[in-house]
Length: 313
Image 1 (cartoon, helix red, strand yellow):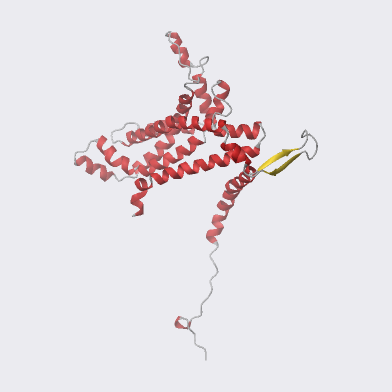
Image 2 (cartoon, one colour):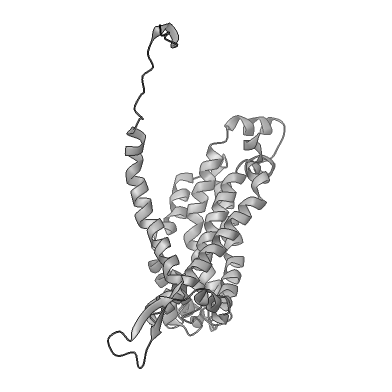
């Protein structure tokens, strides 16, 4: 005689897995795979290949794609043009990141102050440059920099003052950083300002009752509480800085101070589409992506306790 071991004599039923969440996730997973994973995989594949040319390279079968091993990566790591461009980007970032992030924080604090007038207009005015495409912004600033067409140089000449050569070798980094600051402050300001608005107003009222000034409230309450937003904007800005391409490429026809390899991404573009060396460009792309990941995650690791320590408790 068999005994039913299930509670209350009920038989266990095997339920089918719920596929509804996977159905909703499927479009995003497919899009992520096609747009991101497949191109990255193909780039990694090309980085280990090269073209072998037989004879003059003119006949059929004279150009053959073969496995190159680490030759492309060896050439990348020993390329002086790449590392010279990386040093220029570091100098560009040393100017851009502090100026942009500090300006964004200052504007956010000013807009969040209780006695600020025209706060709505200020938010729109500060954010508006971010809506301008990078190519358009670079062209606009490029014409302001050019002495022949710049209204600033025209006004200075009327007063007998010679205008500075903002596209010259010594000032081109600052000119490019100015374009980045003008276009990037608005986005970072909105992120920080949104974080400020999420802070309970009761904290500020209590601080004012205790005799704190607005400066003390900003320094001791607001800035510490928006540290995660500051970290996020810093990471995004760091990634964008390492991948700078549009501004120097747009200004390059206007000046001799910008070569075709002024930044690492400009060198990748030249190798891929001017020299038709996709394999070397692919290896350089993988190296740049790896350096970007290391710097970004290294920065997050360094500030993890400061920014997110309270969330782990």
